[in-house]
Figure 1: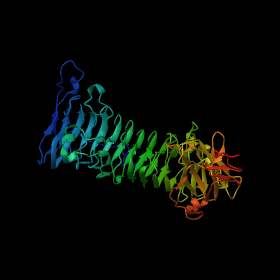
Figure 2: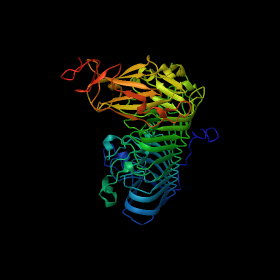
Figure 3: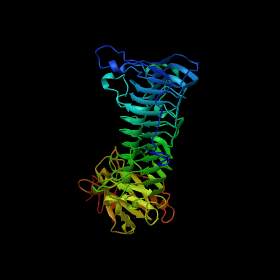
Figure 4: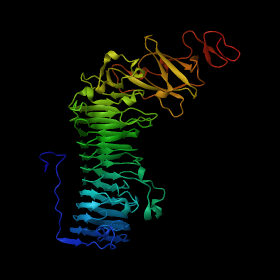
Length: 548
């Protein structure tokens, strides 16, 4: 086995699976059914508020009654506040249904336990109303799928070793290994069961509650996710800190589906067969900092998700290694990957700074070919992704992005879909016409007549279909609109410009001068406004406001 001396992140766990005091049950289920061998004993602490309970140093074998709700090896049931209660240094093995279940109970310490070879979720908070409990230094290994025909109305057919339904608890130093589905799952559904009837839970939504403590937890060798917030997501009102996650040799290291306002700090993601972090999306703000990604050929470090939000995710002070330039198959490792998932309607770009790579820096970021019509512009604040060390932007190599850029400053990246343009300063502008009519928008540089591009609304994918989405470098521009299919020059009823926040690049150049003053909007090339219909004409207006 791998030791800490061999690898500080991916050392093997060794656990003693016996204790001198043994509780062992024989299968006693109804005769002639498939559940005969999966119907053992159960231990329940039942309605004992304000009484400290202690279960310590015992071995529990063949407990749990599969398919029977409430029948688990260790189960605190609707006991309210039981401060001082401990479940410590026990072994639960070959459990037929779950391991340690905290249900409608608070302030229980679950510490230094070993659970091996169990069915369904293992260490769990059952209803979603449980708070102020602590799960610390527990090991769960070989968590098996509970068959659907034995369902107890939950998601045990996709088991997680640590099943979290309420974030207002403490999770420290736990190891979740070898699940047939997931290691750690934040499944933050509405509070349910008996807990839903309690007045203290009225109007409470676990998806937005604060996270007490999540530190130094490990998930490895799980069939699907090391850790996930799928599918409901987690969107706390205050920032949640996932500190010291170690997630390796899973399919996905961390899946942040529909999640916002979380900070992943001091994490390690290693040798995950698909990606280290999946669906790193811009629902409000998410941050990865001071972390390490180790991959291999054909895998991804971070897969970004372009969500329909006007906010930015950040990745900084993070290293990527093992994502070799080319595989024998001809594919590449992708430390940073945008493009495997279809982008949404309106989105903002990630912010990257102080990143390090052991492979070809030009291949650090992959922009998928499915994004050729989207605006992809990712800023490297400090030049760590550019071999020359100069800051700039990654952009997708498409005419709507490159027409106004000095392409002499750009070098190709991975798969020739990405360009890195150094000393280039870009700013996004949303142009809202206030009309759903079929327009095109023509943008022309006033300093270089060769730089002209006609934008279609489809590039923005705006749900109201009234907006154009453009990304421009510092310059002065003229803008006019064409009505389709006639391609008549005209002025929409009301046009507004919305500028993204200014870039952090200060010198050279500086984007702060790209404002409405940089845009010359109106009739172009000696056209005059036709006051009757706001159309632009080179001649007179007819009585119907048409150009003559």
